[in-house]
Image 1 (cartoon, helix red, strand yellow):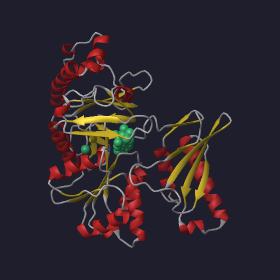
Image 2 (tube, helix red, strand yellow):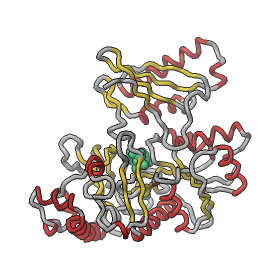
Image 3 (cartoon, helix red, strand yellow):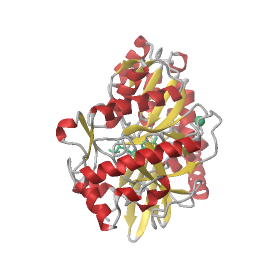
Image 4 (cartoon, helix red, strand yellow):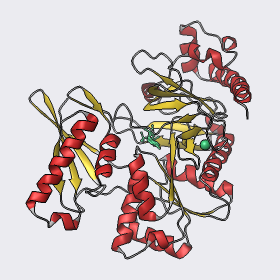
Length: 423
Ligand code: ADP
Ligand code: ZN
């Protein structure tokens, strides 16, 4: 579709969405009235910035169902996202929403090159988390053979992968890494297996981690992005150019705003991602602030798709560490560690506060071989890592080399940060 065609479609769907929330969700009606906005004021995507933002706290305040735009009898499913503090975020779907989401996810798998001939092993968690079921319905819609194994049970996971001839693996990148590592221990040669595609997401990861996973598993690894509030996985997906994720703009409008001033930023500038849903019935969202930091890329992609792309999400603002005034995302540290390549790709960041000073320790595993080496070599490696972190990120950190297999492995989203500060 031409850019112009997309805009027209978005404008039409935006008007419908704005009307739907105004008529059916008291929260939005009130928010619009407070700023003197009527649904008729929104005529095209150009009017988007007239609309108020929605934030996570609004979802909490309206727990569980008060932001839904349909009666409960129209809901066919609910999902909820973890929410480490307090009540979870609850989202709902009508039958049309589920159908649309399945189409969207089928499109995502197809973008990675999957077809009905593939066997898709879904090792994202099933349940309230949107990852498992979101991928499940999409892979089925594509006509692929779905193995709904969910996360965990790593040895069995690898056995079935061999026996069933799995060709596509969908899971978090950190779990993929764990699977790759465990395969080696079990004497399974993944690169020689039928596995050919990885659809990895739900947490930040770096391009260096992509290379690592591609080599270890003998696959092409693609990034998929989404969040429960907007629909779940499938908001955006990489094409085979592996150069940013195409946003499914027929379903969502993406903006990037300055997280401080909330002013919309032009394409190419880094800021907070904001999404407006265009087709959702049960749980439409208007200018939802994701807290995810990214950049929108306008330039046409070599694949020929016209949807705007977004860069890899470095992390979310609530995962961002501020170490002595410098903003640091775990994925930046991951990238440095993997670029040096002399440690294992397992790491954890331990933050503490000594007096008024934040203290960052980076725990990173060394290989069995390295661990039995001379102390002098370990000290050298430590110094090298410390210098590289300092020069790339501009912060000083203490490096702690730990024994192989001591950092906990994740079966879902990895926990990279241990924050011991009492803030
Ligand atoms: P929660 O993690 O709060 O339970 P979700 O499961 O909805 O909720 O997670 C959505 C979040 O996961 C996104 O807002 C984003 O921070 C992160 N995320 C999802 N996909 C990716 C990705 N491909 N890269 C980086 N971060 C991602
Ligand atoms: Zn593309």
